[in-house]
Length: 402
Image 1 (cartoon, one colour):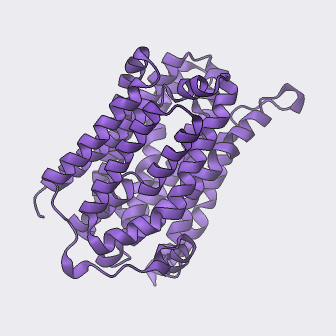
Image 2 (cartoon, rainbow, N blue to C red; image 1 turned 135 degrees about the horizontal axis):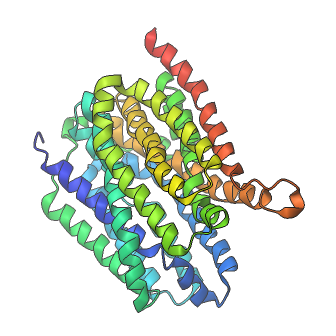
């Protein structure tokens, strides 16, 4: 496992996984419209509900999948997750009713796609001092996939709203085959442990991880950062259309710039920053950059200034791999899957709350009757949530010094 080949295969899996997700983004609203015979506004409500269902399944089943991978290994769980994702996309491609779309979202939410298991895999094959940097490769891989996926999905969408779902399903199943033939198991037999139903319960799993002094505080930081960062996918298109008058092509172009910037930050910049600052100081830096970027975004009113700001916004993503590295080094090798399962649950909670929360704030502060028109209000709230993340981080820093 000293070879970089398994890490390359995992990153390639994540690129393909993100491409599959990105493929369907441009056409999901049209598929819902087609199935229900409704307008785009009502389709957005159903789209939000489907996202909520996926996030709820992640919260409920994330610890179960993580604990299962601690017993049977990462490889089988990863392959099952990828295969389930392929079935999910193909089911959506042929779904004659909205009910089957809901069933498909339940399937993919339970499987948890491959993010958590891939994170546990990287923790297995990385020495403690390199875990944070290798976790950055996850974000970089997703950034690359999200650059390619929406572009290809938009082109395939010209063939019909179901074509990208077929392509995404084929990609996911091919991904499972790639893992089957080329990916070795990462979890050594001596680091495996018996499956524990108590730790598979999301509430008990959160409580158990919370009892580890540093991990508990870092989980709170992770939740607040995750909730705040959801402001971008929740309202970016609405905000840029409202403030800058963007077309759908311009929205896509701005997301492409962000995807490229994310890949550069988490695939390249994170390593020298970690070497110079260490994990804890990198988290501090990332939080500060996140707050500064969100505040600047509220002030920017020109399109060219926005495109210059986007790469700076991506530097805030230094937080995620550094934070993940801190937590991974605080638990044993036999509990990396359990930790990633808990993180999936925490992110699931943030994903359930954030879309309705931030779109609600945007709706409230863009109403003329409200008396205060401030479309950037969601970013101000997100910046405040990021400031709150400093409170548990200070406590963790004090524990580490003692």
